[in-house]
Length: 288
Image 1 (cartoon, rainbow, N blue to C red):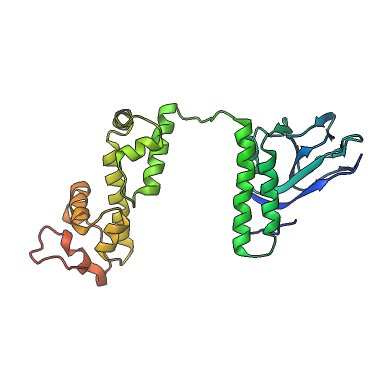
Image 2: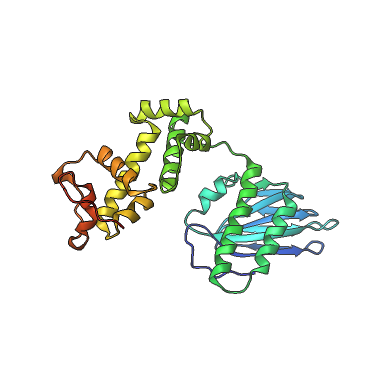
């Protein structure tokens, strides 16, 4: 199956398939213009890349790099059945590295044979041209690489310290979930840390608690919406994770440090939506 997919750019499937080979079936020597991964489901074969020969058995996969001369051949007595995926994108190397593959490591192993076969068969069942199928196939491609990455079990690497990784992940959780009702316990559970320890890390590194960070982040988002949109305050409060305008108003006043010259400027036609936050206003805020 060939996929003419232009919807994605970082990492996307070009084609895939499954083949039960005859004895001594071979391909090459040849070069490819893209990355190609073959996975042996059963039987045996041989892969030649550069001056190296690899014996490929069930559970083994071999990587073909673009513009490299390669050759592969099925065993005469026990010819292999393999599946393959061709892929491209400007972040291909990043995904390959998470599976333990690069120009120096062309072979990997994965025991999830039945699962990988089911993924390819699922892609083949969604071979008609449609936007939904393109997105669906993209998801399956990630699942395929998740299997290889799971088997590679490469230790997570980062330039950050372990402590900073947890803070970074906690902030990521807040940024993705600030519109919902979340607690410090939810954040701590997400990063698998004790609640008290997470609070200590935030205080030491950011000089504020996770709760304070969440409140300030919500206020920052609210400020952007107040300045850049004509949404009513009620809608903005809901959009930023507040159950009602009163809770939003209190949080905004406490965290924005109100000064008349520092208030976000609303569009003229929307100024009445903002009157509920002005301490000098004598009339009641407009209800929405």
